[in-house]
Amino acid sequence: MTKCQQDETLISCSNHDRIELICLYQYPIQLILKSGAILAGIAVDTQYTDDRKEGIKVKAENGEKVIALETISKITVSVDNPHITDIFLSEK
Image (cartoon, rainbow, N blue to C red):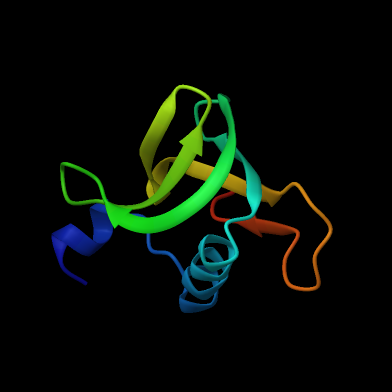
């Protein structure tokens, strides 16, 4: 394992697929960040942050934001759907 891999939070392929699915359907979501902050909005797309971290673009009331996946503990889809309810990215 390289130093870079040790420092980054690894996201499973299945979680990447789930994140892409919620963006495809532009589901309303709630993000619970590792800091304890909560962000609600519409999942728009996957995108890299300015510092090249994998992220999810969310359309919130105050505009679009790209949130680094490594900063997210949990993503909850806020509407009933046949695909996904919760995505757990970290226990921390």
